[in-house]
Amino acid sequence: MAEGCWTKITVTIGQEAVEAVAGILMAAGAGGIEIVDPRDWEQAAAGDHYGELYPETASVMPGTPVKVIGYLAGDCRKAPILAGIEEQVSALESLGLDAGQAQVAAGLVKEADWAENWKKFYHPRRVGRRIVIKPRWEAYEAQPGDIVLELDPGMAFGTGEHETTRLCLAQLERWMQPGWTVYDVGTGSGVLALAAAKLGAGQVKACDLDPVAAAAARDNVIYNGLEGKISVVVGTIAALDGKAHLIAANIITDVIIDILPGVTQRLTDGGLFIASGIIRERRDEVTAAIEAAGLELWEEDEEADWVCLVSRK
Image (cartoon, rainbow, N blue to C red; front, side, top):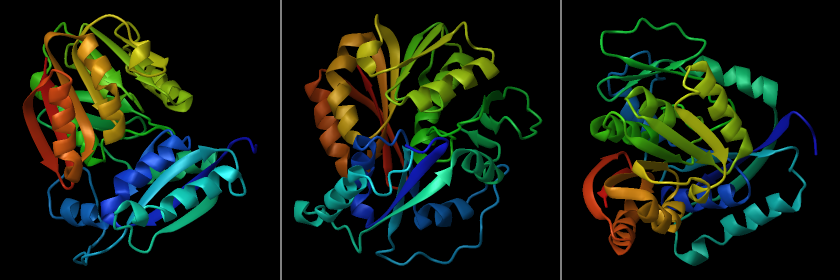
């Protein structure tokens, strides 16, 4: 395996098949998923966001494909794992999904180059009323009441740029109570864990299956001076013991459904579960699973094609 490099897998796919492709890449070992949808640029450019510069955008035509990107450690361009990804993507049409003109491309990325080049596109962003996500290398003059999260995601998912992260942060800000114990499942860069701690959580336990993500989260915890409040482990929700007043999970739909029994076991009576990363077409499937797990749907929000659900035990 080549050291210090990653294989960038780019799947160009129809919008309906985005979540299925994200699941394929994560099952192959990608710790985080990047989704590049021109519809997002179109919507973002129409808004007013602090510190954001968006390119001029034309109207997005119906059927415009989406790029789903994942990174695998080392050079996997000729490895069987890439052929497996291609085979699964090709089979999506037979599962009833409109995959469009599906294409899979693989390229090699040097870790040092990737880590530096993407930074020029990442700027401070306000999420919700008070949370500001600030890259470590950017200057920002905090306003009264701001909760500033200093972040360097490295190769991990979670910059605050994606709708699923923003939805989850907004709900976390809305419902968090001082002194609560919070679990962050699939922590990525640790952004939700950082936000919970700075919103007043007494203790935050975070986990991620990807050791690279867990390491990035730990670095961000240290940089924000929150070692005494946040612990990060490699693993699933099964690695988090005790009970939580609030559990947050910004992951894909299938994983949310899979962990629901564990969520119910670990929530205190009256505790909240914030689930994001749910594509709109599967919202009803998740709500049914939430109710089957003994939770009550409490609140929901959506942005673009993504839904965030808050349920209560």
